Length: 318
Ligand SMILES: [Zn+2]
Ligand SMILES: [Zn+2]
Image (cartoon, rainbow, N blue to C red; front, side):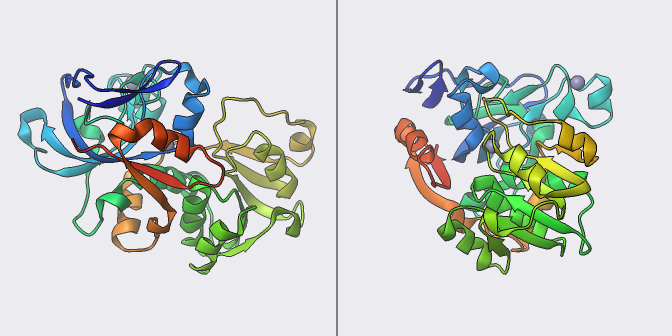
């Protein structure tokens, strides 16, 4: 099969061996896969991962344990836990110490014609959600993780930093809570996508410092944390969604003095993401910048890495 592999450089492999599903695993024919900032960071050394890239996908199950999922259109959670440790037994396989993560850690990814992953990771996609929309379920779930971790409601002043791929999803999810939200970014054309949905936006310098109850950093930049901190009120909460290969130089004393809570936030629940798409409560379609065939995957990754480009999809159907 064809696959897009990173082994120090990104290259198209024309005859990659198809994945062999292990016990409890399903084999999925990938339709579409989305390129995200994490994929680009991996090609800069993040996680030290080498292998087939990609973790955002939608596909059809070809083979599953006892055939129960065969023929179903699915999306998949990306963390595969051992199933036996304390974390896994508590349903927290995202923190299993021996987990693999598709396209990120110890497990081949979705920029390929086929992918294998545990059947329990799969979620059926309802018919009213298109393939293009379903390719966003994984990052949209990561946006729903914010409101799973931090109680946000109509009484809260919330600032969302970053108008990139994840920022535009996180803003739409935060808006569903009825909070007093402002989304900050430097790209008027991207902020306009949020304005069109009734979400207030501004340039970062227009917002008063030390006012917000909750600030979400979705900048994808090492500077995001310091910016978020400057906007947070004493005893407020900073939610970090940014994962960079680089380090963030932040003075810690203001965190102590202002008693700020910092919440790291990674993968989230698929069910509310699927529901929000099915019920048209979020719109991901304006985020699609381009769709390339898998065979042009190297060019697609290059396109996704250009400044200001939102979601680039790969069509992985042979
Ligand atoms: Zn991602
Ligand atoms: Zn485990």
